[in-house]
Image (tube, rainbow, N blue to C red; front, side, top):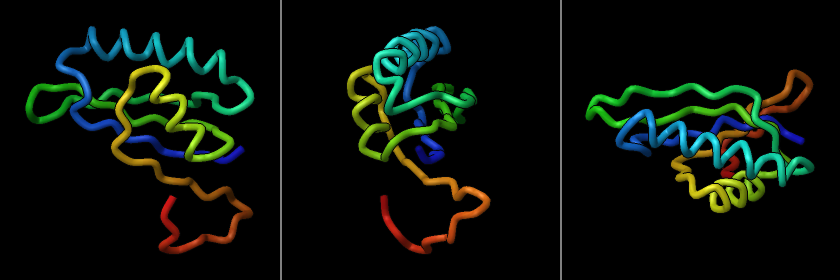
Length: 95
């Protein structure tokens, strides 16, 4: 398992929509427990009055993050691998 930052910009029109999405995400993560686990979620108040999020997750791969998002009907704008303390940084490697 690796740690990833998942960015969802201007994904919802209200905090209620974001909370509904969070509930779907939690339910789907329970079904995919071997592949993904949420560490922390931050809600973003966007300049255009929409709501986004930044999430820290542990996942088996970026593809697992995308599968989870698709199953939970969540957008994904960006997935960034967070280097672990003992990892060699792989500069410029796209995930």
